[in-house]
Image 1 (cartoon, rainbow, N blue to C red):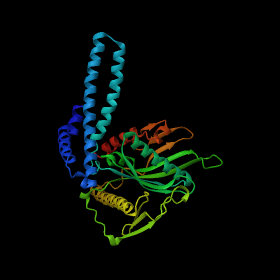
Image 2: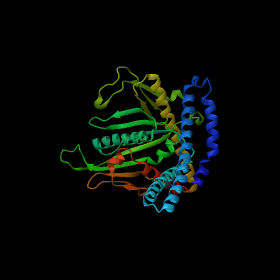
Image 3: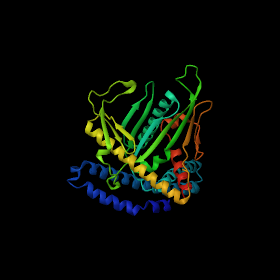
Image 4: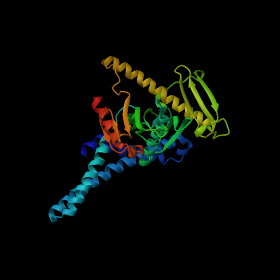
Length: 352
């Protein structure tokens, strides 16, 4: 626990909180809404982290007292209570330790998640929608705010693609280990002969762009189209042309936002997503140059990273870390912390 406190540098956390509290108390704070939201979000995050460590420290002290009490009075019930609490605290310390492994350049950023259906027809579209729900439920479990920017619905069921933001510090570092191809094996509910179907969906995770990133975009290299938002099955959900699609001509990157807001807001959101994609492209090019210098020709991430099997047996298995659970429904309901923690530890061990 002491080493974790040292890595988290609690003195710096307390100093940062003091600075942010001063900024948050400024009478003109909300003159700049975006800056104000960043200040209050960062403050609440750091206060939560500090509270988490201090609470854990208190629980560890209490366990020591419980064990001493059980020993002194030879009380089996108290000893059992202490053992149960010790197990819970160990899990909490493990989670805290994982946070100390997030030290990449963009790890502390908020995240943009893009999910798309791949091979497998209507089953793949349905699986993509299940994955989107899984991540949104995961964020909800942790109290992390999310915002869906764009959903492209498939004809029969599910989605072709979706883009959403997870608006909490370290969301990128945490979720970036989820990037790759996810595979689903099940009896297809869309097959009238009840055959087993394998389908695929891709997950892309990007760090949210900040002002210091300097992603220069020439307006003349953009094609901007406006259109009406559409809902499931193709029905219109908006009577005005407020949805925005932006094509970055030099790279061919296309982003869209149809969040049922004004055209101006949708354009701003789409530009944020485009900047994040261009930043990630630049990062990958830099990484490729570094890998070439190191002689690491391949991408150690691989492509297919997790398998969700609902038939003939029930299991979700990460193909990189070997972490697996026998409860696919729980995983698809957002219980993915075990996979994320194993992924972060795996990434750290393979990149050292």
